[in-house]
Image (cartoon, rainbow, N blue to C red; front, side, top):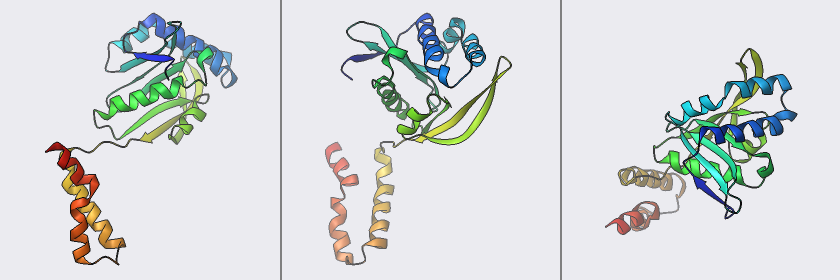
Length: 206
């Protein structure tokens, strides 16, 4: 993604512009005009300003050549992916996955076990391609208008801390004893110090 850079400072007006373009043009094939109007009417610039002042972490992808805002996304420390919108001209150019990976890295700092989101029909294929699974289909009511979306979730693989390594070593040893019956006790004790998932980390930290 060398064509884009990520920024964390963006105005509510710019967020709304990308949001409205994305919803109006990209989602029109899956939602009616009445549904789109209700969706947009709820997420005004004032509403985006409120969100910017809350606990959400916002990032935006900017085209390095033109300086244009290609898309934005937000997540909270618990792993709830609140928003992800890509301007129509940048659809299917890697912008969404670029932002998603950055958000995954950010939320793992807070030891979130997964990322979950309320995903539109339009965005469903993208999220499935990124390892999310559907928990349930939902019907939401926005300004009196019913719309369908999906609750989706993706587990995260967190980097273990040094305090986890004794437990990891126990898991390794139990797995070896349960599956590697051809190894003698002497073999197990010989290989145990070379368990790279545990002892290599300790060596480079010492």
